[in-house]
Image 1 (cartoon, rainbow, N blue to C red):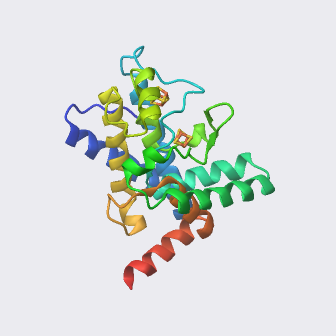
Image 2: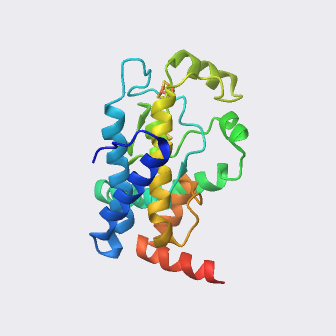
Length: 226
Ligand code: SF4
Ligand code: SF4
């Protein structure tokens, strides 16, 4: 599972092939979740090889969890599966209801207004500042980073934008590359364009309403065919 090619296009092609090969080994109903999990694992393996020590992110640090998070639908099903495995039925129902509320509350905001609204992600534990779906968090969250925590806190206090926060561009770039490969690898299954990703709360709500990835795929195909 190594990314050996040097240039970006070769890496993207390699990642896409790797994810497609991984998907093909599995029954259709497991393919989306497996591809997203594999993509996340590939990102973590590659991110671990990057020079470290200068990333400011850590547990309990969450000023950044007030922004739109774009995800692939495959990642939404990973989160849904994780929640089903780790939450009791009542807690899961409450959380999914809150996720739907959050999608309606912030889904229509543009990125600047979303940041300025300072409405925390529905999966953030506001007491501890920890991500409650950390193991299943999407690639966008895995790649997002800062090399200066004070810059994050100041941007949060200003409420204008996160544009001035210094970041490790390599980590960010790799997460975007893997996500692009995931989009390409799952495009045929989803009958969707590779860049057709959605916002986190809306995606998880849609996944929960569909029940499982296969039903979502079928509905999606029908809607596209109309
Ligand atoms: S991006 Fe900033 S606020 Fe978010 S975890 Fe990293 S240092 Fe903390
Ligand atoms: S999923 Fe987790 S890491 Fe991502 S924005 Fe929400 S709380 Fe933060």
